[in-house]
Image (cartoon, rainbow, N blue to C red; front, side):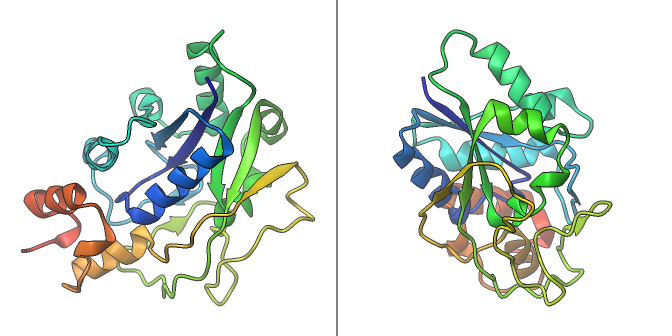
Length: 222
Protein backbone atom coordinates (compact mmCIF):
# COMPACT_ATOMS: atom_id res chain seq x y z
CA UNK A 1 0.00 0.00 0.00
CA UNK A 2 1.27 3.45 -0.93
CA UNK A 3 0.38 5.89 1.84
CA UNK A 4 0.52 9.67 2.30
CA UNK A 5 -0.25 11.74 5.37
CA UNK A 6 -1.76 15.21 5.56
CA UNK A 7 -1.50 16.87 8.95
CA UNK A 8 -3.07 20.04 10.27
CA UNK A 9 -5.45 21.54 12.77
CA UNK A 10 -8.39 21.32 10.31
CA UNK A 11 -10.12 24.05 12.28
CA UNK A 12 -12.38 23.68 10.36
CA UNK A 13 -11.67 21.38 7.43
CA UNK A 14 -12.71 22.99 4.12
CA UNK A 15 -12.77 22.39 0.38
CA UNK A 16 -9.19 23.59 -0.03
CA UNK A 17 -7.93 20.79 2.22
CA UNK A 18 -9.99 18.20 0.37
CA UNK A 19 -8.88 19.41 -3.07
CA UNK A 20 -5.19 19.15 -2.13
CA UNK A 21 -5.65 15.65 -0.71
CA UNK A 22 -7.54 14.54 -3.81
CA UNK A 23 -4.78 15.86 -6.08
CA UNK A 24 -2.18 13.94 -4.06
CA UNK A 25 -3.94 10.71 -5.03
CA UNK A 26 -2.81 11.39 -8.61
CA UNK A 27 0.75 10.62 -7.46
CA UNK A 28 -0.28 7.00 -7.05
CA UNK A 29 -1.20 6.88 -3.38
CA UNK A 30 -3.76 4.33 -2.27
CA UNK A 31 -4.69 6.21 0.90
CA UNK A 32 -4.42 9.75 2.22
CA UNK A 33 -4.40 9.81 6.01
CA UNK A 34 -5.66 13.05 7.53
CA UNK A 35 -3.84 13.56 10.84
CA UNK A 36 -5.49 16.23 13.02
CA UNK A 37 -3.00 17.75 15.45
CA UNK A 38 -3.63 17.88 19.19
CA UNK A 39 -1.34 20.80 20.03
CA UNK A 40 0.59 22.27 17.12
CA UNK A 41 4.27 23.07 17.71
CA UNK A 42 3.97 25.75 15.01
CA UNK A 43 1.03 27.89 16.04
CA UNK A 44 -1.32 28.66 18.88
CA UNK A 45 -4.88 27.83 17.94
CA UNK A 46 -7.16 30.83 18.36
CA UNK A 47 -10.94 30.60 18.35
CA UNK A 48 -10.36 26.85 18.44
CA UNK A 49 -12.84 24.13 19.22
CA UNK A 50 -12.19 20.88 21.02
CA UNK A 51 -10.12 18.17 19.32
CA UNK A 52 -13.26 16.02 19.43
CA UNK A 53 -15.19 18.54 17.34
CA UNK A 54 -12.36 18.98 14.85
CA UNK A 55 -12.20 15.20 14.50
CA UNK A 56 -15.99 14.97 14.05
CA UNK A 57 -15.97 17.61 11.29
CA UNK A 58 -13.15 15.80 9.52
CA UNK A 59 -14.99 12.49 9.73
CA UNK A 60 -18.09 14.11 8.25
CA UNK A 61 -16.09 15.72 5.42
CA UNK A 62 -14.33 12.58 4.16
CA UNK A 63 -16.89 9.85 4.85
CA UNK A 64 -17.83 9.44 1.18
CA UNK A 65 -14.27 8.96 -0.12
CA UNK A 66 -12.87 5.45 0.54
CA UNK A 67 -9.33 6.65 -0.21
CA UNK A 68 -9.45 9.21 2.60
CA UNK A 69 -9.01 8.08 6.20
CA UNK A 70 -8.36 9.72 9.55
CA UNK A 71 -5.39 8.80 11.72
CA UNK A 72 -6.24 10.07 15.24
CA UNK A 73 -2.90 9.12 16.83
CA UNK A 74 -1.86 12.71 17.64
CA UNK A 75 -5.14 13.45 19.42
CA UNK A 76 -4.95 10.12 21.24
CA UNK A 77 -1.30 10.73 22.18
CA UNK A 78 -1.98 14.22 23.54
CA UNK A 79 0.66 16.85 24.18
CA UNK A 80 2.54 18.68 21.44
CA UNK A 81 2.16 16.90 18.08
CA UNK A 82 5.45 16.26 16.31
CA UNK A 83 5.31 14.77 12.83
CA UNK A 84 8.41 12.61 13.38
CA UNK A 85 6.60 10.81 16.23
CA UNK A 86 3.58 10.24 14.00
CA UNK A 87 5.68 8.89 11.14
CA UNK A 88 7.46 6.46 13.48
CA UNK A 89 4.08 5.33 14.79
CA UNK A 90 2.79 4.74 11.26
CA UNK A 91 5.92 2.90 10.15
CA UNK A 92 5.30 0.48 13.00
CA UNK A 93 1.53 0.31 12.51
CA UNK A 94 1.82 -0.49 8.79
CA UNK A 95 4.99 -2.56 9.02
CA UNK A 96 5.20 -5.00 6.12
CA UNK A 97 2.32 -3.36 4.25
CA UNK A 98 3.89 -0.16 2.93
CA UNK A 99 5.07 0.27 -0.62
CA UNK A 100 7.89 2.82 -0.69
CA UNK A 101 8.16 5.74 1.69
CA UNK A 102 5.26 7.48 3.37
CA UNK A 103 4.30 10.66 1.52
CA UNK A 104 4.29 13.82 3.64
CA UNK A 105 1.91 16.40 2.18
CA UNK A 106 2.30 20.04 3.18
CA UNK A 107 1.46 23.50 1.87
CA UNK A 108 4.03 26.09 0.80
CA UNK A 109 3.54 28.08 3.99
CA UNK A 110 4.34 25.00 6.09
CA UNK A 111 7.27 24.01 3.88
CA UNK A 112 8.85 27.42 4.44
CA UNK A 113 9.31 26.46 8.11
CA UNK A 114 10.21 22.80 7.55
CA UNK A 115 13.87 23.35 8.48
CA UNK A 116 12.74 24.13 12.04
CA UNK A 117 10.83 20.88 12.55
CA UNK A 118 11.86 18.30 15.13
CA UNK A 119 14.41 15.78 13.80
CA UNK A 120 13.96 17.22 10.32
CA UNK A 121 16.76 15.22 8.69
CA UNK A 122 15.36 11.94 9.94
CA UNK A 123 11.85 12.98 8.88
CA UNK A 124 13.04 13.84 5.38
CA UNK A 125 14.79 10.46 5.16
CA UNK A 126 11.65 8.59 6.21
CA UNK A 127 9.26 10.41 3.85
CA UNK A 128 8.69 11.51 0.29
CA UNK A 129 8.02 15.24 0.65
CA UNK A 130 5.12 16.73 -1.33
CA UNK A 131 4.49 20.48 -1.45
CA UNK A 132 1.10 21.82 -2.49
CA UNK A 133 0.73 25.21 -4.15
CA UNK A 134 -0.87 28.03 -2.20
CA UNK A 135 -1.39 31.73 -2.87
CA UNK A 136 -2.13 34.88 -0.94
CA UNK A 137 -5.62 34.38 0.45
CA UNK A 138 -6.41 38.05 0.92
CA UNK A 139 -6.44 37.31 4.64
CA UNK A 140 -5.70 40.32 6.82
CA UNK A 141 -4.81 37.96 9.70
CA UNK A 142 -6.58 40.09 12.24
CA UNK A 143 -6.89 38.97 15.83
CA UNK A 144 -10.40 37.69 15.17
CA UNK A 145 -10.08 33.98 14.55
CA UNK A 146 -6.39 34.16 13.67
CA UNK A 147 -3.88 31.45 14.59
CA UNK A 148 -0.69 32.97 15.94
CA UNK A 149 2.78 31.40 15.39
CA UNK A 150 4.57 29.73 18.29
CA UNK A 151 8.16 30.71 19.10
CA UNK A 152 10.18 31.73 16.05
CA UNK A 153 7.75 30.26 13.54
CA UNK A 154 6.30 32.83 11.14
CA UNK A 155 3.76 30.63 9.43
CA UNK A 156 5.22 31.13 5.96
CA UNK A 157 4.17 34.77 5.59
CA UNK A 158 6.27 37.84 5.06
CA UNK A 159 5.83 41.19 6.79
CA UNK A 160 2.99 42.15 4.46
CA UNK A 161 1.04 38.97 5.19
CA UNK A 162 1.71 37.46 1.75
CA UNK A 163 2.32 33.74 1.50
CA UNK A 164 5.91 33.03 0.52
CA UNK A 165 7.02 30.36 -1.89
CA UNK A 166 9.46 27.62 -0.93
CA UNK A 167 12.83 29.10 0.01
CA UNK A 168 15.20 26.70 -1.73
CA UNK A 169 18.16 27.97 0.26
CA UNK A 170 16.48 26.51 3.35
CA UNK A 171 14.38 23.72 1.88
CA UNK A 172 17.30 21.58 0.76
CA UNK A 173 15.55 18.22 0.55
CA UNK A 174 14.15 16.56 -2.60
CA UNK A 175 10.43 17.13 -3.00
CA UNK A 176 7.56 16.78 -5.43
CA UNK A 177 5.62 19.92 -6.29
CA UNK A 178 1.92 19.11 -6.41
CA UNK A 179 0.23 20.72 -9.41
CA UNK A 180 -3.01 21.21 -7.54
CA UNK A 181 -5.88 23.53 -8.30
CA UNK A 182 -5.71 26.58 -6.03
CA UNK A 183 -8.78 26.96 -3.84
CA UNK A 184 -8.40 30.35 -2.13
CA UNK A 185 -9.92 29.42 1.23
CA UNK A 186 -8.35 29.36 4.69
CA UNK A 187 -9.67 28.10 8.02
CA UNK A 188 -8.75 31.48 9.52
CA UNK A 189 -10.92 33.28 6.99
CA UNK A 190 -13.83 30.89 7.58
CA UNK A 191 -13.68 31.37 11.35
CA UNK A 192 -13.54 35.12 10.89
CA UNK A 193 -16.49 35.15 8.49
CA UNK A 194 -18.58 33.03 10.85
CA UNK A 195 -17.81 35.28 13.82
CA UNK A 196 -18.69 38.39 11.79
CA UNK A 197 -21.92 36.95 10.42
CA UNK A 198 -20.68 36.95 6.82
CA UNK A 199 -21.37 34.35 4.16
CA UNK A 200 -19.38 31.10 4.56
CA UNK A 201 -21.81 28.24 3.87
CA UNK A 202 -20.30 27.16 0.55
CA UNK A 203 -16.69 27.17 1.73
CA UNK A 204 -17.08 23.84 3.55
CA UNK A 205 -18.89 20.56 2.82
CA UNK A 206 -22.57 20.52 3.76
CA UNK A 207 -21.95 18.04 6.57
CA UNK A 208 -19.33 20.34 8.11
CA UNK A 209 -21.63 23.35 7.72
CA UNK A 210 -24.39 21.50 9.57
CA UNK A 211 -22.05 20.43 12.36
CA UNK A 212 -20.82 23.99 12.91
CA UNK A 213 -24.35 25.42 12.90
CA UNK A 214 -25.81 22.69 15.14
CA UNK A 215 -23.00 23.07 17.67
CA UNK A 216 -22.72 26.87 17.42
CA UNK A 217 -18.97 26.77 16.78
CA UNK A 218 -16.75 29.79 16.05
CA UNK A 219 -19.40 32.21 17.27
CA UNK A 220 -22.05 30.93 14.86
CA UNK A 221 -25.48 32.20 15.79
CA UNK A 222 -27.90 31.02 13.07
